[in-house]
Length: 502
View 1: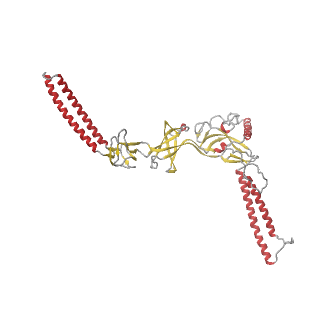
View 2: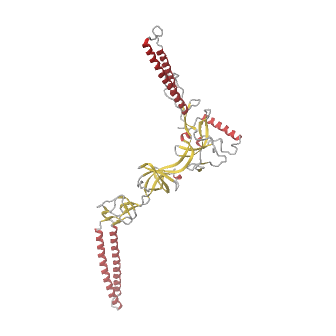
């Protein structure tokens, strides 16, 4: 980019020079003999006036072009400054604002309580009193089965009962007669025992007939399907004229949601993130039907039962959701964000700046400079009370040289504006690292910082020499020297070295 600007500047200078020469030639034309030819009379005056009028616009455009080019070169030089070895740096700004660390997951919305309405008997659907989305109350008749066969069963049970009752009365009369004869010594003991047995059997038969009649009457009552709870019909799985068979399990006729003003999300959370989820945490989520609106909820339960999908272990998290306006519907897919940590009014920087790593030589130079600064502060009495500041002499985390807790002189964890947080959002200790920037002399230096929570794009940082607006390095490009020094031949392209921080 810098070579292209130089090329354009030289080209424009050349064009301006040629234009000036041509302008001079127009103002003082020469004849064939080398002497200046000056027009006479009215024609010569007109020609000179026309050329004088052209001189001012040409100079104006030349001045404007030079000013624009210089401004562009200055802007490029500020945004992409180069070091002495030709390295061009890309900068980002340390900002002040709010951060939230979230865990993302997906889940489905459902009613808190749903009831499947079935039937305990087989039969033909003769009537349906409700349909989808209808409001029902507990005990309301919602469907009716055909009762022809059921009523026949009741008549049969009643006839069986009457027959058994007649047999019971006959058994009682026989027993009384044999009993009298047995007391007089006329009837044998075997006849008396037989009469007693027949009486007992007749009484049992009557009880059995009564039970059969009750069963038939209950089956008739089961033909009338009523709503078990008050709510909304969200599913209807049968139609009039359809036959349902209740053999091993009760067939489902309806699905009733008890209360759609209170719903829940069954979110599937990966095992690597489940340790950050706690009951009572705040939750944000969106649905595709209302992508511009954010809904809120609260973690109600973290279930211990796990599921395995494609060798990934997931846990179900129940999120309680309020739905007073009825916008949320059962079955909607929710994209959930669990807010596991938050920070208000803190310094933050783009993650690219934390990933940037200069060459080993630059790192060694920065470490030596910081070590000298630490020794100078210790001699001045600033760093003697804490062994955590400066350069302890070892590497600490991915940030390069091991830095202590910036701005902390008593060894205790620092706290932000949102309260004391000795650890970042996922419970891990804050990492120590360096943010690289250019000093007043244009040399690369490092600012020791301690990182906090991150939202995936920005990370909270805290440091002694850190302030909002500081330009820190997020990347570097090594520009090779041009093979040709001809300013009128455009460069074939920049040769980029290994990227830093990308």
